Every structure is written in structure tokens, then in C-alpha cells.
Image (tube, rainbow over all chains, first blue to last red; front, side, top):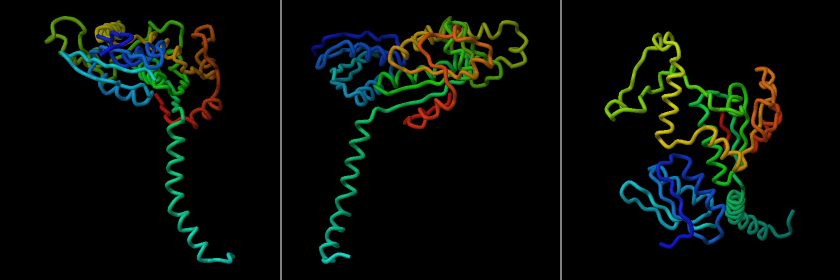
Amino acid sequence: MNFDRELDARGLNCPLPILRAKKALGEMTSGQVLRIIATDPGSVKDFAAFAKQTGNELLSSAENNKEFEFYIKRK
Amino acid sequence: MSANPELEALINQKLDELLPQKLEALLQEREESKTPSMAIIATKGTLDWAYPPFILASTAAALGWDVTIFFTFYGLNLVKKDVSDLKVSPLGNPGMPMKMPFGPDWFKSINWNIPNIVQANIPGFESLATSLMQQTIKNNGVASIAELRELSQEAGVKFVVCQMTVELFGFSHDDFIEGMDYVGAASFLPVAQKADVTLFI
């Protein structure tokens, strides 16, 4: 999947991945896509909730090899 | 009253059918367009209890909520310029595991059940426990209090401080970080009244 910006949140724990993602999205323009890689297992549900609440669209959420990958489209 | 009772009955019946749906839709619309808000009272001044207010405040702000934290009593420790000296005490705290943040996994998983009477009599036990916790925090990729506090302020979380306790404990405004309002309970309560979430921590 294409993305405009990438956030490496590996090794970070709650709530840092969400806070960093929010900051990154704030610096992007509407329609741009942010790719996030995280290792916090709680981030799967947290990013779904974050997307739902903020209106930024969670395009995909996947796990491979204990790493979690999210694509979020800026509102 | 009415010249046409049948017509009136019909109108009433229609209203009974339509009004609840209409109201429901309006209320839902209002609920969705409203910015959620949270008011937190932070009263604890130890390293462990410093986390909940700042984690919740910074996360709520990231979700787009309006957030206010009211710092009072020992919570004043959380807004001092330097928060690197916050301590945690395992003494009289049976809920706190005592595990080592270094060594092989089998060693790290041991819970050192040290009796209160021993903890109380070893000089520096609190400092030891604090440095172990700081190391554990670092090892786990958990943010520092200073970092979470800065992120909260950056995200627009409002910090208000209880002026009465500032005086009670002999602090001056110079002891604290910038960008805060010094108020009393009468200023905080109306904020809490309108908040969707109110927490006493």
C-alpha cells in the first residue's frame, strides 16, 4: 500500500504510539496516508478506537512477526 | 376545545409516532457534534501515581477531547519544574511487585517479597525501589513523566493549580512550570460539571 509518511513506534508503549501518530497526522494534509509500525500489542485495539473517535480512516491493520502495521488516512 | 375532535386525535397520534424518532435523531446529532471533555483531579505525588493523570490527559487530547487537570495536595509535585525526583515507596504497598529490571529472565521474574519491617529499617530502601522502577520504565519503552507532561501541554491540556495547597505547603509559583492558572475549588467545579468524564486520581 502507498503511504506519504512513516512512523516507527517499535519499542514504544501506551500511550506513546497514539500520541506520536496524532502528531504526525497533524503535520500531514487531508487524504495523505500514514504508515505506523508498532510492537505494543495494545495498539491494535487502540488504533481502531483512535480512528473511530478522530474520524481518520484506518485503512488496514495487520500483524506480522510480532509487529503491528497500520495505515491511517488523514481526515 | 377543538372544533374537530377527530382531527385533534389524529394529530396527537401522529405526533406520538413521529416525535420520539425526531428527538432521538436530534439528540444523536448533538451527541456526535459535541467535543468530549474530561476533568481530572490529581492528588498524588509519587512516581507511580504520576502516570494515570498524564497518560489519560495526553491520550484524551490526542482523541480531540478538551481536558483540564486540577492539581492539588501532593499532586502539586507533578507540576514542579523538576519531576526527576519523584519517588515510589513499596513500604506498606502490598500491591506493588518488587522485580529486578536486569539479569536473566528467570531472575527478572522473581517477586521479592520483602516484609515491611525490613523495608522500613533499611536506609535508602525507597531510593533503591525508585531507581529500580525508573529502570523498569525505561526498559519497557514507557514515557517519562516529564515527556508525558510536555506532550499533554503541547496538545492543549489545561493545567490548573489549587492556590490554597500551594500556600499550605509553602510553595511559590516559581517552583512550578509555566502556563498554569492558580485557582480555587469554585473555578474547577463548573468545569467538572460540564465534563463528560470526571476522575479523582
